[in-house]
Amino acid sequence: MKKKLDYEQSMTRLEEIVGLLESGELPLEESMKLFEEGTKLSQACYEILKNAEQKLTTVSAADGEEDGE
Image (tube, rainbow, N blue to C red):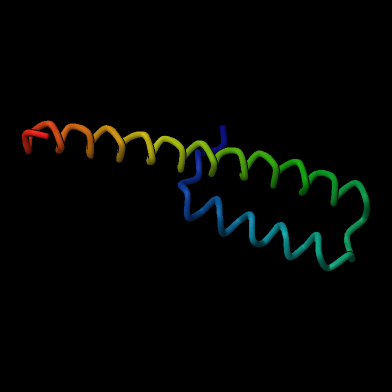
């Protein structure tokens, strides 16, 4: 079982994939595999950021309520 990467690890891997794909030196099959991996990493990063935004919104709203707003 693969361990789940955190945001920074995912972004680092995504940057590596982009570099490899931009090089144009990979066979088509390998490029397709990397593109698929990159798409999954991109989606995972989006979900991490979306969850972080929701947490910040919740904390900000709770903080506002405590301040009497």
